[in-house]
Length: 108
Image (cartoon, rainbow, N blue to C red):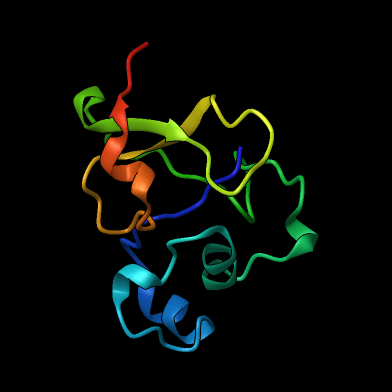
């Protein structure tokens, strides 16, 4: 799984310092390179188990299915027709891309 963006809830001041203080808060983690820089992630964490420390993902309140959108991945040449990019509808922290406008609701 490639996590391409996140919405900082805590620790955004520290992330901002790591990212050399981006002008807008929404630009702090809206791309995989920006996100890893903001979180202080480098190749040493490649392949880490995200269920244990030091690098882990917390469970939060789930996003309603009606708010999840899906679109083709961006910047690839293979499997461009596959809907493999998931994000929260109208979230300011998702990178701006034309695919966001045309994204369809996610359905199981």
